[in-house]
Length: 349
Ligand code: MRU
Image 1 (cartoon, rainbow, N blue to C red):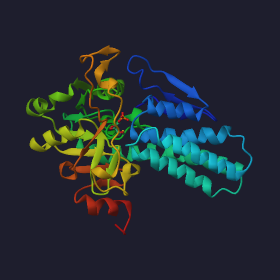
Image 2 (tube, rainbow, N blue to C red):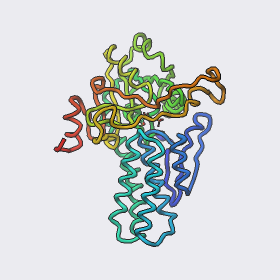
Image 3 (cartoon, rainbow, N blue to C red):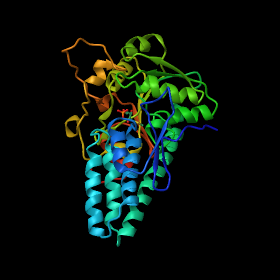
Image 4 (cartoon, helix red, strand yellow):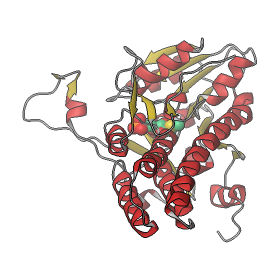
């Protein structure tokens, strides 16, 4: 039976999380009682990956609730809103963050006392964590048939267990396929500049006994030509109601190459990643991070002094390049503007 390290763990008033900036050299857990430490971890990408960010933010609210000493419900709700606002300012693109924070705050709003509100916040955070793991397992079971014995699968970034509560999204079908005895190879694009592919995906898949090779991001074209790739499988930070997919830098070029080479291009994401308020690329923010992450590698400057870098942390793949979206409610196929609301059970779209 597969045993992956837990990305996040609630320990009765404390949150333990893997510091993903230290992988693959060290597997280090940080334990904290402080919601601001969790906010800092999301911003600095010690915790990263859309579902994991959402769960961590929910637990940050739970830490606040657990340790808060205010005794009026009104004050408690005011402070909870302030903490929610601070958490929402950590990273802009992954919609799971906003979804999870809003869900926890809404749970507190119907409380009848401070103690009731505290209990509701903590319970809601635990529920979000549990549901994410269940959803990812379903994604694995639903998507597993897409991976054949002997296949080569290509992925970008880390949409793995580390990026979620457990199982990952893009990796969930891989783990289920592995459980069912299939042998296949995964090409992990290294994912400059944060190297989630080389550091994290290569680490977690190899730990699980799945064959994985790392390739540079700029080799997608020649890989499609020479390596007989059967499937491209990626995660998402936000999927709009029309099927635009925001995901880590390099996803869109991968989708373009996949289309030219007739490689099926699937996105795996829980429905908590679908943003029905956004239609197209202009409706939400794409995170721009500090150019120094591009200009330096492990503290060593690789570009001339005086030159800066352009660094969007995500790109947006248009719906016409997406073969299907694997969710816990089934695989959504085009036309997305019709089938996304239908899968979510929304009739008014
Ligand atoms: O900047 P990151 O590392 O948080 O970006 C992560 C990704 O782009 C993932 O593919 C996405 O969040 C899905 S994780 C299941």
